[in-house]
Length: 276
Image 1 (spheres, rainbow, N blue to C red):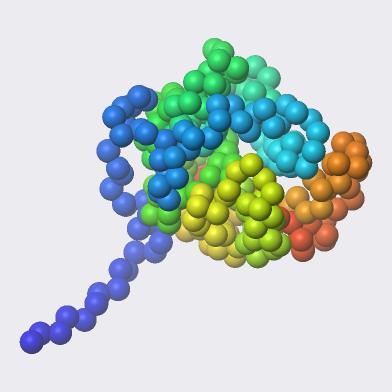
Image 2: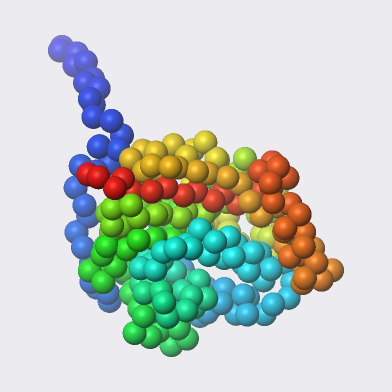
């Protein structure tokens, strides 16, 4: 019997990720785009435009959650105009942008993409139903890419594929913005309460759990510079039943040490190196 000693891969993680062969591209509407994620959850079962309707409702905890979440993402997009939104859902984030932005939204759900096209589609806002690892040519050389509450729905290998494809479409010096639940916070309790009392069960959807350290390491692994990861969105949404504007005031007050210690979401950003 010959015992083979495992050979350690000499390449650093960023280079190993970069050299991974890409998955075959798929066109919008291609066979196999059926709305199912890695966890097997069928995202076509979510009612058409569900999360956009919640945003527009402008009352209650869930609606305020989305308003405050997108507000922080928009802050990170300042100064950037050519935009890619991966996992855009019904197109709510892109719908908040004026025509100075040239935005491309992609999602695995044809139902949500059809809704986004009807509600927000224009010459400066385009939407495609494709997997996150098969981005269309229309989103090349973007200067900012947003991946809002997507990575928790993907298995680790799929996260690598999706983020790798996203970063490859950024121009040099482009910025990536990633948000995801913070499993180093009270988020598991929130998820349990949503499962018990809410309309959507996130347990079978959230198959990848991130902490600040793990998200920071992931962004560094892709060779991004100026990586920052911070928790945000702590108590403010829960003040919404007492007053919509009150929740906004709480959001302003909790920014800083309070949300860094109790933030239920993570906001991660990084810059693609300006020299290759």
